[in-house]
Image (cartoon, rainbow, N blue to C red; front, side, top):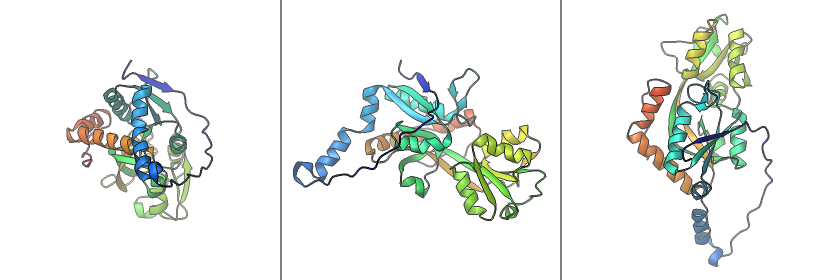
Length: 282
């Protein structure tokens, strides 16, 4: 059935990639023009259409952006967008639910067609993957333990401060850049938050939409500088394998169409809350 979700159990092991050397073309039919034509004819978009499935890597641990609902089904902002994309392609959506640090290795190993987990295209990631236009806005805040004695962002950059962040995340990179003197402990998201709630860590940099419900449920914590809480405002994008020009053009065209009509804002507000919108995808 087209548009129906088929989701997979977490991938526990990733394929180890062996290095390969590309042979050089020597002109004639094997020259650049032929290579470019072969890339277009063998593109990932055609493969998705031919096989009838869109295989997406996700981390279903971040409600309301992406999570598993009470009925055991994938749900949230990202899942709604993936359903829309699969429906427009006329294929079945297949979700692999992974740990965050398995996302990039899995995509490089061609285990899925794209990753939808709000990745920010940092320079190190750009060497490995291609990224679309932004599809989700992020506002990073700091959550502190109320007994930490920290009352201002400037107090975080100290050797006596312990901070947590999601392994390999933009928040972890931001912590290293903004607060280099603090001790950074990278963990999975839930343990990273619990370290702060328990007082074993002083603070965490995290997306606002995750911070607010956590603080509401954990009175030992609070958002630092609540009247001006944002330490960074960024945008997450979809990631796809390098070299897939046709697939990238399709995804950016798809985003441009729905962003210009306000559809992504509507879906975001339905799941997460008010938004100032996304930049145009040109």
